[in-house]
Structure formats: C-alpha cells, structure tokens
Length: 393
Image 1 (cartoon, helix red, strand yellow):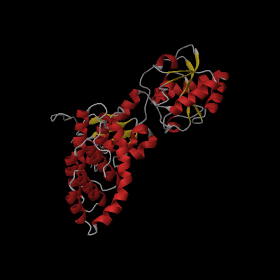
Image 2 (tube, rainbow, N blue to C red):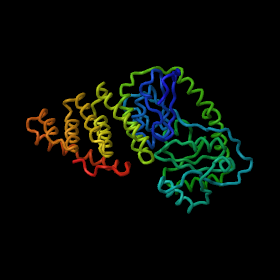
Image 3 (cartoon, rainbow, N blue to C red):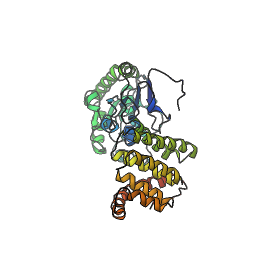
Image 4 (cartoon, helix red, strand yellow):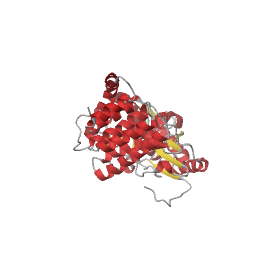
C-alpha cells in the first residue's frame, strides 16, 4: 500500500505484465493514469485495473475498447524506440529475428520461423537485438495477437528494413508500407520469404525504405517524442468519477490472489482480503449489477471456499445479498455457502424468504449457476495448491 503521506499531484502506473503491485490505487484523491502495454495478453483483467484510474493509455489499439469496458476513458499511446542506435556501415547479416521462440509460450511464432527457415536463410535467435539489428539488411517481425511491439520501432531505429505482419494493430496509421517498412500476410512464411528474396535482390530499394523508416522513427517515435506527448496528457488530466473503481479493485485483486497463490500464500492473503473488501464496497455503492459483477463476486467466493475459509465466504455473500436482496444468483450462492458449511436449515431459509417454492427455485437457479461454478473452480484448481474443496455442491 502507498504511505498515508504520499500526496503527489499525479500518479502514473506502468504495466509490467504482472498483478497489480500496489493496493488502494482506487481511492487516491488525485488524478491517476494507467499505461496498459500488454493489453493483448491481459485485457480480461486490465479492464478491472483500468477502472481504478482516471485515464488508461493503451499501447495496443485493437484492445482499447476492451480495456476501457468499465468506463475509464482510453487513449491510444503506441510504443517507441527506447534507445538511439546508429546503423552499422556494413550490413553483414542478410535476414534475422530476435525474440522469444519458446513453443510453449509462442507456438505460432515457433511454427512460423520453422517454416520460414526452410524457405530462406535467416539468423533466428534470442538475446540482445541491438548488435545484430544494426548490421542486418532485413529484420522479420512476428506479432502476438496483432500487437504493435517494440521490435517494430527498434528495427527501424537500427536502420534495417522491417518486414512485419500486415495486420498489426495501428501499424498503417503510423507508417506506410513500401515507404517506411514492408509487410507480409500474417502467418504466411511463403509471403514473407518472397518479400525477403525480392529485397535482397533489390538493394537500393531496400536501403531507401530502411532509411525512410529510420527517419520517421527519429522524427516521431523516440522516447523523447513520447515523453512530450505524455507530459501534455498529464497536464490535462483531472479527477474523474471512477464509477466502477471498487469493482475494478476487486477484479484486479482476485487476479493477483490467483497468480500469487502459486508462490506466496501470504501475498495471496493480502490480495484476497482486498478483493473481499473492494467487492463489498462496490456492492454497497451499487456500482454495477451486471454479469461482470456477478462473475467476479463468485470468483472471490469460490476462492475463499477453495482455501477452506467457509465462514468468510458466508459473511462475504451475506453482505452482497444485503446490497442486492433481489439478485437470484447471489441468493443461491449465499445459500450454497451456507450448505457447504453444514448450515442446511439457514440455507433453506434464505431461499424461502425469496420464493415460496424454495426447491423449484433452487433447481432452476442451480442449473444456471453450475456452468459458472465449474468454470471458476477449474481455474482455481490449477491456481491454488492443496485446495480444500473438490465440489461446491
């Protein structure tokens, strides 16, 4: 948590592709900005994270709508070339790629470069890009979920011809194919190989495009250029309603609990506690009453029960029901938590207060709840070691 005397005039939170690292961001009394870089990997929970902020900047344009789904204004803020690098005078490498090639993490990438390597000679590897990019004629890029990655800007800064997929999100709004870079049909090793052969046979054309691409990056896409844009954003930003901030904190925290439980139960406890209090506050403030709220609430409930915290789950569900007394999903889940704890009579009474024909109501609602429960429990069985619950019936 941030210290009580921490009172800057702005706060910027940079996505590091991990769980939220500071709790309580949703309540800060000054303008806050989130920079979501890996939204193409984490949009499903970055939309919760974004709900705690006054503005979210999104590196991957395609995912702006999803990241801002809970009401936070979003702006596109593409990546950049982080370092000034001079191209080598002698281009001793014809074609290369540097990046993660683990088939378990990037199966499409690994398969693509395996096919491409059969068609053309290409220096493929991992590790530092700077030394090899600056002396390469052509650098092949491969995107993950159509992202516009750092490799795009790094390649052009290094003075190589960038050969990149034609469907990278926002690419055509920043650069022109055939002028600043060249594109190939996404996932087509054959198309990429054809472009490689062409430009290796047409050196003057290759060099001209590479030079124009570098000039464009130097003019518009350096860290200094982005810093100027960012400074203007910080000057204009103001406090907003953050209308789903506690819900967002609950969603982001339960994701943190799920991830951290693999390595630290103490850390998972902190996340889970914040998720519980945040979702209760969200319910009391009536921030939202939709599928997202229902799903996230159940994730918290089942996480508590998987860890054997049955009484805590009962208290949690009771407070949600008090906020939304006519929400059938919450009533049935509250009843379910009571039954799991062996409180069958209380469970029946909860349902009777809502429906005179308790068993019929339970049967119908139970069928609707079953798929949600199975989905969440499937995720938690893989996340929480030594879980105490094999079936929540």
